[in-house]
Image (spheres, rainbow, N blue to C red):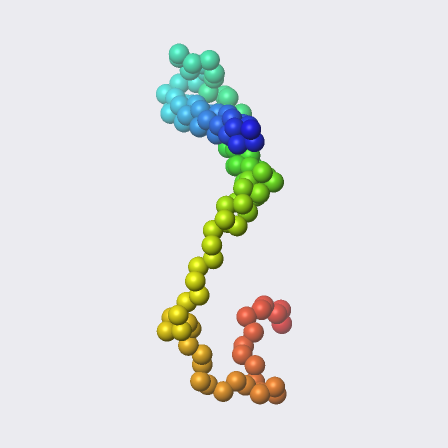
Length: 121
């Protein structure tokens, strides 16, 4: 049930955003030739800003809906259930393990490596 609800809402916002991008591109190309009402369409060249803002807003809404779906408890529980069913891999053999360094470790009072943190001077 959860998957289909999020899928429907995501699809509405995603495809509405695509439709508005198409309308926006039509207005941009028609603005070069004419002003006023676009022939064969129910909108005007002056609607460019409104259609552009609505297109961006609906596209962001589709991203938000997808993020809410991914972080929903039903999906998190599903992922946990899937990963708990998988057996952990066998440990790597000794030949594949990471070799340890033979260099001496610095003593407590030795010079430390340079810091990567920014400190204003």
